[in-house]
Image (cartoon, rainbow, N blue to C red):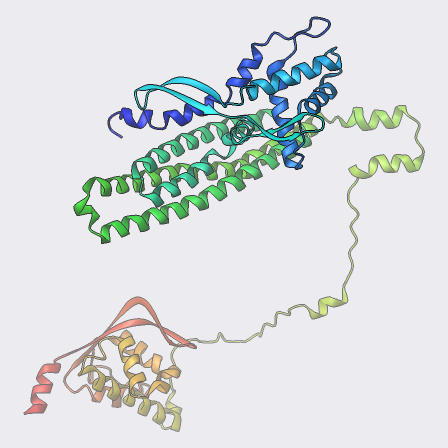
Length: 508
């Protein structure tokens, strides 16, 4: 936000003060001047917190008959090696703690403060302990933790700092669901602060790894820590992706309802939320990359430095030679000491399975095999194969001229599609089809009679006769055409010049 909004700062002030007020009974216990029989000060604040944990544990195991006597027995077992107190002293301390958490009047505890949100004096009522049951026979009152007492127990646990970002993500989704866009924007800013805090912690962790890995145990501990951090960041990254998608859908929904026209400020807020969330997600993604880098580089480098430090500290003469010379050892023991430093035994065996291995078969030929275009010698000029090839070339040219008139022969790929349409796909499944176009491309531009018969070896005479006075131009492109699985050829652009005059002459 460009300017400071006082209302945003003071918003929720009462709830924050209420959380602080929950700690007030512990500070009141700290002011109690309680001593044991040797005038050693008793830690009343610590005993008060331990009493809350005792009631919490009893609540977990569903034991609802917990009163002053049970709390006194717990405190006695806990502090018998620290303080010198008799049974009556423990009951008095237990009763004091219970009365602080739950006043004898039976009313809730109250905390007075000035509410900067509403601008007037205010009072917060809260209850740490509540009466649970009463035994008429023994005249014993039992207690259990109230909701505020449970919140105080959870507030003293290391929970919020570790998962604060995940909690903010859940709160952001709730606020977006309810349409609280101002609160959502503030929540994103708090998430940005959490990401910055995580960035500082990861930076400190990097220096700790480089400085503190001095053994395999510390290496294993840091490795597990990095894996835990990486797993948590990965879960948060997935949640960020879902939040981005949710914000995108919310923006599109508002746009479809013309909110950007009716409520301009609301639509501006959702755009700002989108932008800020993208920024926070980007910074969080960098944290994930840093963690992976710590795992893959820094941690491995620290382990290697630990290994080489051990190698440099090793002295062969002092640790091995002097030990063998100064201490008489049997021959078997000397072998055991020297074995790690000897060369690994190597034996060469021939395996019968080698006959099943892949065999490279090379054929020796006096002349190299030519991979060029098919050419016929003089002796083959009148052969059936030559006549059939000339016929096929003529057929290809005829089909091309038919395809070119309606504009289906401008490229080789379009001509191939035309062959599919008329049911002549078998034509391009043969090698001579591709040789025909390669020859034309090599001799382009092609005019009837321009390609002279070279000792009777050229096969294009009948095909080129169909061109009459027109010129065929074939140009190559980079794209590869693969209409049939066995053959591939580069794309060709095909054009006929002088075609219009010929067509006009034909019409006349």
